[in-house]
Amino acid sequence: MRSLLLVAALVGVSREALAKPEAPGIVCDALPEAALCMGRVPDCLLCHVSTAPVSWNPYGMAVQAGLPREASFAQELPEVLRAIADADADGDTVSNLEELTKGTLPGDMTSVPTQADGQVSGSNPDYEIGKHDVAYAYKRVSVLYCGHSPSYEEMRPFRDAAVSVEAKQSLLHERLEACLESEYWRREGLMRLADDRIRPITNLGSDSQVVIAVPLETLNGRPQLHSSMGDYNYDYRLWVHALTGNRDARDLLLAQYYVQENPDGSWTTTEDIIPNTRDDVTASGQLLEKPYRAGMLSTMWFITRNTMFAELPRTTAAAAYRAYLGADIAKMQGLLPVAGEPDDIDNKGVANERCAVCHSTLDPLAYAFANYNGFEFNQDLAVVADLFVTGSFRDFGRFGMYNPDRPATKMPGWSPTEQQPYLFGQKVSGLRELAQVASESDEFARNLATIFFSHALTREPDAEDLPELNLLWRSLPSDVFSANKLIHRLVDTHAFGAP
Image (cartoon, rainbow, N blue to C red; front, side, top):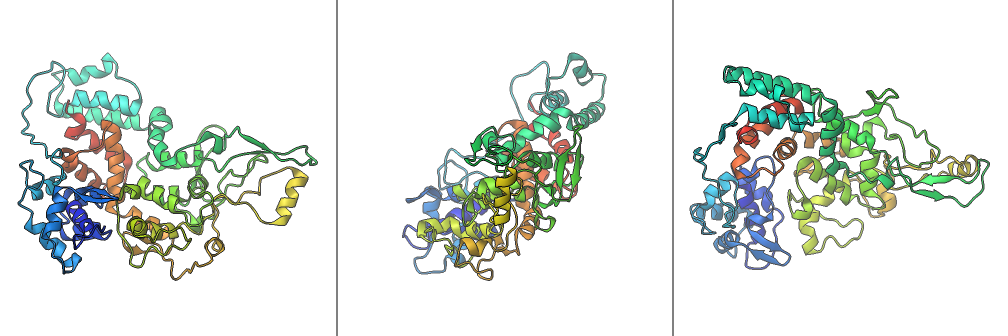
């Protein structure tokens, strides 16, 4: 239903080609039971074929036709949505209301709820087709979380008719727990789930082999600088640490500690700053003071890689929104505009009508990251002078560090009272509070569940999966956001265990 309202909102009050970025919020306030409003805000495809130029699908046209020319958009939109609820805008024989409730698109005739009746034709000698089969679920568990197909001996109890279903289920979860503590899951499988959020670039990481020669002779010879922006291994370790051992996954956003690797290969946490110990790189360790840390959102690698030389860190904010709250602003997802925004504080032209649709949400998010250095160097002349004496770059980089003077330096029109960060329409004091609000949101819980669901099934959840997916993410608070417990619940779903 959120998706319904979102698209409708984008249609406009009149027949002018206008987008309404406030639509997602209106949609979900009016129809919170809509499947596309559960743990997220819908995007524009509900009503639109395109937003640049603006064009509508059949459902959007139906919404547009019902909106009075001279009326308040916010007041009239919910009435129009209810008025066309029983109609079938796209002609697929399913009403608009039913499609919204089940999570399909009422303006796309190829998007139709699955009419599952539980009856599956055909048979299979090994598995219960169309039902949750413990043997099938275990085989999938072994591949996904232990990294190998199960042996004949491992499968035997699951195929033994003399073993009760309850005993098989208990054994399944016992072996799953062992897999979740395995070296494969911790050092390979789970790390690969982080790739899209960390996006390692070898030539810019701590293991960079790209060398820049400084053309000055020093006491130590000619210094060489490795082109590193940060050590993304800290990001991977925090990801794994927060998502294993029944720890609270909200540490992905809230951790004020770092995870170090010891010489013997073990991992430990520390709340201390980790200094750069290498003379040949400008960015190593973790230099951010504890009060300004926000888990994965504030690591040196995440901040530096995304912010780079930008005055306002829009890319950094968009990456955080996409990776941890499941909304891609570039696809017009998660739009919850802030009144008076965008202010175009860095004169990039984002107040243009076409740009403002997204930037009225994005820029207030970016304000929370504005105090964190991107690709910036130490301006202390003593440090620079020391570089040419010692040949050491240890203190030359200021990457990812907190600098309250940065916004005003980069953007002369910056005002800490005017440029207020917002998330989900709520004003926050800075990145720490933004992370707190995000970690407590349905969007974070749903995104976390979707990550593991999509990994297990090698596809995105569809409308038929929504009931089970919703149960999964809604269980997270009672499980204290344990990823292990989430996976245990996942393997018991029909989607996971039915051949």
